[in-house]
Image (cartoon, rainbow, N blue to C red; front, side, top):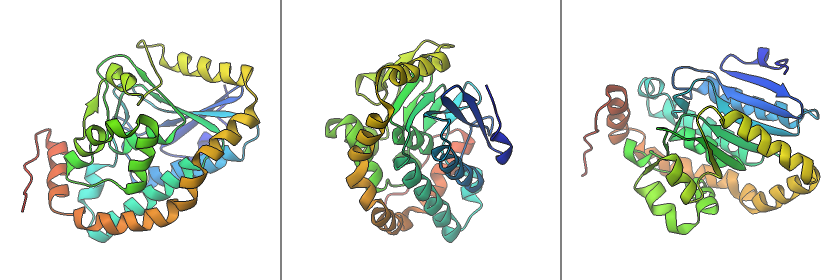
Length: 266
């Protein structure tokens, strides 16, 4: 396994293993997202897209408890409304980059994937979880935020409309077996077997299916949404502005204080 590209990044590692590349968040203990991490993830996907030695990518996280816990509450709380909007603008840029990523990408979710962490997972082609206490959930509403329309469309494309209200509006956090039952993840592996299981799955695809055909089908599946993502991102930022203060501050503070938020409904 080589790590030749990891020196480029402070908060990520890239490890090449034959035709696969592991891209791991490396911001312990919760692998949360700051503007620097978001920018590095965007740059890493561009780097891997151009690397002909890499056929498929696995997105994971260093550590056992968290795949990614979403945006850093400490960072967001330190910003004014304009600063927060800038963070979300860069996050939307990353989402477009990942959604249009030309290679097959799988998420190896070995710990909690919440809010922005769940977003990273849903943008991949395949998702795998480790059995245990981890949760996969879009907790934006539970933190006093809203969700962009294009993200709702991506989630619906994975799990179908029948589960969208529970996932997005009610912000349910799913256990591995629950996520599997609704199609949010493709497979659950026993603890300690996740990395090898995901590698074996992708190697099996590369050994039995033509790579170019898979990539072309992926591009076709995502073509319509890719064409409208930039405009949708602008609308989503406009829709987001009323939610960047108020209940969002309380939601983030409650996360840091490990308590239930007390929202104001006016």
